[in-house]
Image (cartoon, rainbow, N blue to C red; front, side):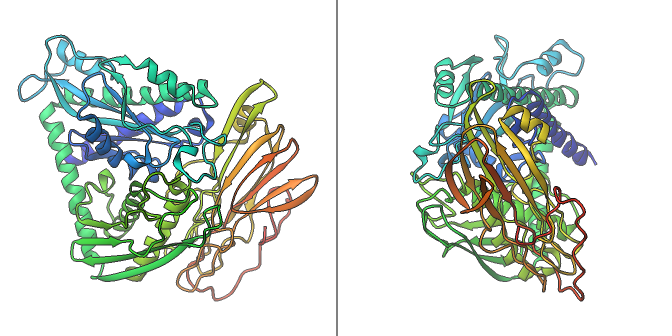
Length: 571
């Protein structure tokens, strides 16, 4: 019972960190879409609590913490580290992580009892405030906040370009101290803001991340002041052990054997494709080997995923599957995952090496890795794995000068689609699936922040795969440009839709369409072009796959509202 109480306290801490980040942020991508993640780690850098934020961030953050500590050695009171380098625990360059240590004053085996002056100091200190002179700091753990910044430089606004190497994608930040012993590194701060298109927004979002760290820092120190350092440390340790036991128990439920699957990315934006991803999952008792041998070598375009992405997708799938098999919530994101061994071929699309471009690896390849893992596990436990969801994030970026202000703008958003139907029911429609857990930008907020007008937004009726439990519907959203803008689209499932399962039909593939002067022009899945004022960018996301063979096919529902529904399956 005590452990369960601590589990909820730690989880609430990370959720409150996320709330602080959201409320203090400047950009719609963080404030409205919630494209961020917050986490608590113990003194060794092991995950204690991961907020229910972005799976693709959370599974990779332990590697960011490990890389930061390996590079910097240690973090002292008043330090805040920063990193976005995909080859040092990051995911892609727009995802910037801030990490701060949590120290408490050493007072024997426990901290001062609640209500004392020392306890009040412990609860109220700021993350960038060094300890009082003469105090002995004791490292209790770390708090981390990762946020997707709408621009970090690079070839195109939004920093999600069609690039051939990572230096074209934006500013690459290895693990560095942005704050050191309570003092901000103003030279580094100016360097960062001088290399982005929207410096005021970037500064505001970075300060919001610092506010998030302050929240987690204060809450954990308050917890120590109330309950004592010893019990808090013991709960952290036991929670990780409990998560590891759950993972081992869940793997033991899966029949022993080798389960293989293969899928492919359609292209890399430069003519390489299909790009296959293969996996063999070997289950032996309470252990698993996840072997990606046979996957494509890394390619020219940015669909390359670094090892942190592949580990993140695996952690996500295992957590979902084990929670379904055992009927319990797995804390700490699955703990250390010491029951799992990865085989990741170096220099491959699932373990890319510098100087590979990786912008789409975080968003598109992570989804395909998830699809491949789910397909393999479906062969082992078919009654617990759904059909494939949309399998893409439909990344849309645009930037230029806002005629209303004369200032630069950089817009980034992902678009939801259809979730795959499953053994327990139909898939949801118009949602972000799997490695993306964000929201849409509300029309009012989008049109306020950017020179766009949303002229059509609705479900693509009939795009979900038919089946006993049909797949969810995709989305059609049309953006009218009110100024010139450089537009980049990074998407998948434009050739073949997400497959069904157990006799269910595949979902409809997505489409990207440019409507210019009233005429529609089909766009590829990955494209950059100069948009004109009056252009309409139409993103039509895939539907989810259906689950189970349908005995009868029901007729399509009536479409009384031509603006908010789409009667054509092909659209």
